[in-house]
Amino acid sequence: MNSVSKASTGAPVQAAAASNTGPLVIVTILFFMWGLLTALNDVLIPHLKAIYTLSYVQAMLVQFCFFGAYFIVSLPAGMLIKKIGYQHGAVAGLVIAAVGCALFYPASNSGYSLFLFAFFVLAAGITILQVAANPYVTVLGDPKTASSRLTLTQAFNSLGTTVAPTLGGMLILSGGVLGAAEIGLLPAAEQAAYRVKEAASVQGPYLALAGALLLLAVLFAFARLPKIVHHDDEAGAGNGKSLLSHRNLVLGAVAIFLYVGGEVSIGSFLINYLGEGSVAGLTPAVAAHYVSYYWGGAMIGRFAGFAVMRKVSPGKTLAFNAGCVTLLVLVAIFVQGHVAMWAILAVGLFNSIMFPTIFSMALHQLGKLTGQASGVLCMAIVGGALVPFAQGILADSIGLNLSFLVPAACYIFILYFGLKYANMYRALPDER
Image (cartoon, rainbow, N blue to C red; front, side):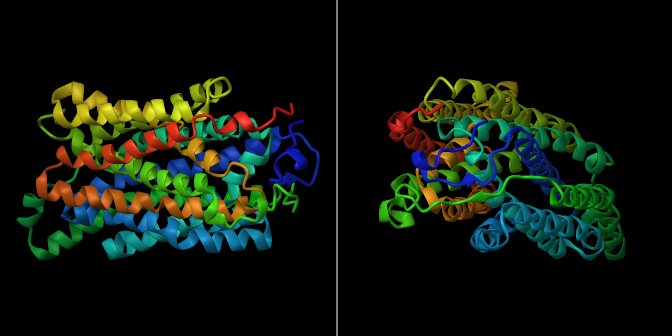
């Protein structure tokens, strides 16, 4: 049994003293599903870009709407979960995400604008899941191993992101899409018919996902999970401090913003980057399989990180990985050919532990403020909307390769955050 001690942290504690294994398994399924749904964006972006002959900035509206939902929905999600509880909040998130997936069916017949709305609704559901599930994992065990535990569940999130590009490539990109010049040669009526036909390739996969999410919502609603409650002890009261007076939370929110922005930005441009003649010259369908290596590296790294961070400071591990990513992105910018291709794909391996590590470090010793702070951190995921948009502007103006300077700059701050809190957990007594 790994129940959290009220006296030691004042953080959320379990109302029932039960084994944590079952609840962790159930929550881990949620991590897998939202990983799958999020990484499918990397396939849909180049697909929609080609169908609707979009610029990079216009194509990045997908991520703008998807991750913009985190900013808009996170605080209301926190209030919802406070009112109905973590478990019911997760069920609500699953149902809303299912509705978002179902909207892809009419969107395929209506055009790009409805696709963007569907992305927003889908992400709103995932946001509620994030706000509910991440704190759940941090309190289901010893606080000293919260980063390790969240990293393990995130590894299954990465399993979803690893499967998604290959699956999406087979189901959505396998038919191939005409280039902008070829589409322009078609009469207006044929262009419209062609776009509807190509967009319809998303209908089957997303209806299946909607059904899976609804089934998961039903199963989750009847699952026997321990209730999470907050005690207002001295630590739980946050020592009388306001939420934003906790510097680790403020800097952690910036780090989450930049990390999610950098990771999503790289993933969003990967298929187009691997299609560059100076890099690999791959077709979108072939490139989609290589995107799985990017997310698969994150999965491997998270399983490894689960073990490493039981021995090594999470902050030091974070700083090391951020330094490696910065170097790899610079290689991808200034080197050509397969060296550049494998450098950018290797970024996923070092991205692996960043989100769960930053998240748990930012929530360290916040006590009863943990739920509210989780909402702030989930709002910071809006970096996934803004950073790719910024890279899109650079890609349209100075070229795709140099635009990767944007995510490179993001990882420099994460390096700083890791070094600043390298010894954060030393003061926490080991109560195992």
